[in-house]
Length: 298
Ligand SMILES: C[S@@+](CC[C@H](N)C(=O)[O-])C[C@H]1O[C@@H](n2cnc3c(N)ncnc32)[C@H](O)[C@@H]1O
Image (cartoon, rainbow, N blue to C red; front, side, top):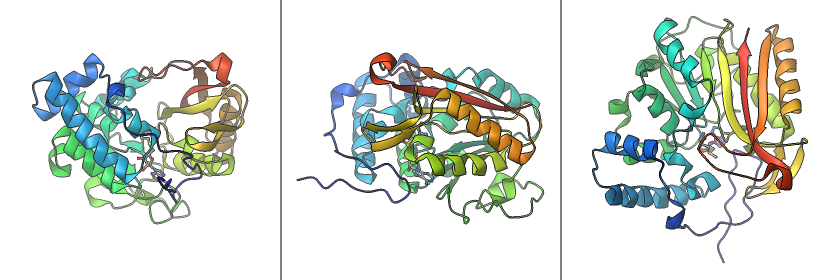
């Protein structure tokens, strides 16, 4: 019998580990082109075998449904409505810093760099450094060659982020080893398939910790997507029991966080039946869908 592993960094617990299924690997044209450009591998079949090999290694680190379904090959960040704004910010806002929180392989951060956001201003954080290393394997890079600053850490730990610390002048990403010096300095923060790993109280705490990092300048943005529901509550899913916000409760949470901080947020959230990377669910039948959201500093 397979033992279902428990990840101590989050509340959701896997109920089963489905066996890997290579037939689920369907790369979209932009994804296959990106992988070819990054790796130099030329044939579709060789790309496929390469992805399957790395997937097997990643599934052994932790069998997340997103690894099972190959979401680590997706370029979902580029399909969000805010992406154009993000690219423009990278060009026009001097020194604008971007964070991908819960980055896993770093596919979204890598896509952003390739599309022109200054790579020295991109930061990626994940509890599991093995996933980041497997991202290097998948995209044929080293951390030095890719240029994105990766910091391993638990989003809830004060080692990664001490929100009680006195804000300092932002240093260059190369010289920091935690998020603490970046309090109030991040122009854009992306967090996808991340908040839903935690129950309601931890999602609220996480929102406060993430909000502490955002730069209080109009146009700064926190955005992403994760599993949500028509009505907030606890649902049964592949990750076992999972707490899902509705667009309304998610909006209320962020408005309250903004009020506490003395910052006005414009929150946009909706429940989609198709995700930014093309997954489809029946929201009416399941009551759950993809909560896509943006929190803007106004
Ligand atoms: C489901 S994956 C999502 C990956 C990616 N953001 C995406 O959209 O496909 C969740 C990621 O969060 C990381 N993670 C889980 N708990 C964490 C924590 N407490 N702090 C930081 N990262 C964590 C996992 O290692 C994993 O890479």
